[in-house]
Image (cartoon, rainbow, N blue to C red):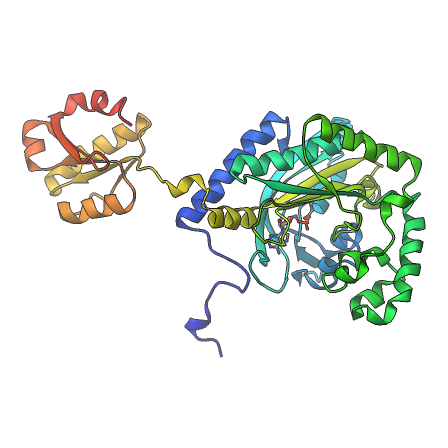
Length: 423
Ligand code: HAM
């Protein structure tokens, strides 16, 4: 039987409060500014989607669909899933709302929680936040370049100083079968050394072996997708490289990079922390998915996108201590009313300050000056505005600057003049 001590946060999930929630909000704010600069519009889709959507979009042989989905049945026995990623839901929404009829080009950004039942460990959570973009309607390699640059810029804007971009092309419906065949022939020679999952997937999707955490290292000599690209895919890739070079964006070609989701074609990329952080986890990743809209029942609309894992970035910034909010500045006003007689004037002053745009806090109860000061200090407040018996009698207020450690009293009518310019 459950007792109250078993009511805890679900394994692999985390609460955000204090500094961590402020960092999350700050990252989201910076992302919004950046997406607006690149002319992306926000899109929000539900956290629950049909199981079928992810089976169709991500592929039945992917780790996510095979073993990482939080699935449930609703009262009508429909199979639903807490979204493991954002792209599939956005493509569903794009088709369902006929967005391609509204504009041949649509650029969306999104942010929100995703859910994967992975084995919890550092950087691998069961609920995590992604910020990402999806660019529909443009098959030109410049849109791949824009997406990769946007992902790097987002990381840079938030404070990640150096990144490593890994890039590959996995071809298209025309040329990939040739590559898959070559890869399968190679893998069959090693069949007895492969993990159980990879052996099972050999016939259905040999590319998955390249993404397998267990077998990946054994496959150094495996054929490379780049050597099997058709003319159009090769040209697309070379043009993309040209764009990246033009803007001085450094990357390395990683010939066995395939990504863990099946919807990609042509460009795939992953972005890792630069320098010596030792992290094996990608901060952001994405690629092109030109046939997904069609696979999900819509028209054929080319698309490219990426998503960044917010917690992984916050953890990295924490490690490298470059997070701006580490040097947190004091801010705002804490209004201290001393005694019941001061409550009326204090409540009016509180509302006046807020109406003038000053961040103001107060508890208006009977706690002592000392305990209210301690509270204000603990909250990181810059000023305490004190209204007590003397202040009521003389129609004054007392302003204490907790940063400069100074204090002055002045007439209540001069409050705005005193606060303006020093906030
Ligand atoms: P993904 O590589 O599965 O791609 O996830 C993108 C990022 O989300 C990862 O690079 C990582 O930073 C973060 N992430 C993934 N799983 C976890 C986890 N369990 N815990 C913490 N962070 C995690 C996608 O999701 C694609 N939808 C990206 C995309 C958008 N492709 C095209 N458009």
